[in-house]
Image 1 (cartoon, helix red, strand yellow):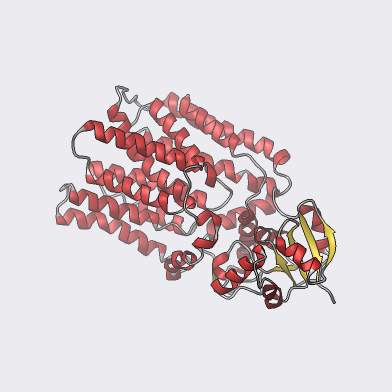
Image 2: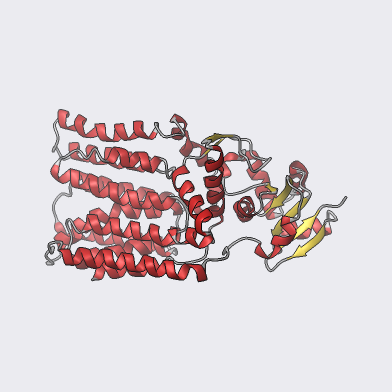
Length: 451
């Protein structure tokens, strides 16, 4: 029952109000797609965006919008438990091929902790689940040498769901290189296996976004130093600490074994460590790559035997997952009927603003404004890559109240501002620029520019 219990607890733990600021604009993007079916082009919501907007996460966005139209925000909130269960089920499926029940359950729990800081309602949940699937599949290929061509359509779905789809082909190349270094492949076999990641990249270019999808990672890279989730991880983060602990266990096992470790596993672990050290957002991706390798090594280092996967285990595991999702579905109307983020207590004032009103807004409110108040043109939102880097730097200066922050207001030409009451710009606009308070909410304040 242990894997099923982890699944049940994961589903219930993921039950929460919609509080990720980006979730809201993802819902709105799905609605825009259903109406216009345009996957790239000018941004329809902000007058300050200057870069083309590519909807490379269109598949989950369509699903989120359809659920919202059918059953409201609680139905969208239920997708987070669904995503967590999908990740944990993928782990169980691949880990149990080589690992005992006890080790599988423990690793599922460790991976859940390692990903906990990033388990929010966004399409990146697809990346976490499919990284587990791809890592497990390629690790199995390193053992039996078989080409798993089904990874090509999986990559196509991945490329329609999240911008980090390229992790899958990279894992494939890493494994093929490792097998060559281990001298397990001749040239012909190497070429046969490497065709899978090559075909996967070609498949990604055949999504509705087209080959322009290949440019998406480079478009975001300029902004990584300015967004919190793209900062380097800290050992004080529980998720990164869990990743480091699992790496430590693996290194200890290798050190005690006293014989060479296959290059495939060394390179996979090295890739996982590199991703985890790169950004806080990629720690879960590193954990998804690390877990299947750790499962093989921990199983060898313990006297536990791998039990055969029985119908009873499958029934208990899937039954617990279904029970967790059913319980989450029953509770979600009471826990997630209202947004967990946004200036919800200022809705009435915002809804009366004239259509097309430009608002100088707090960064975290941009997506919520796009979703909740289509009459407003936000000055910035979580889609940082569609705003010019120079403009985004000017916004950060405004947000922090640095010298020259007033220039941003003139640049945007906003007639209203929706800001956190504790932020420097709110006080500066009132006391230095003569703006008036329309209404102050619990956390945010709506300001009007002087005539």
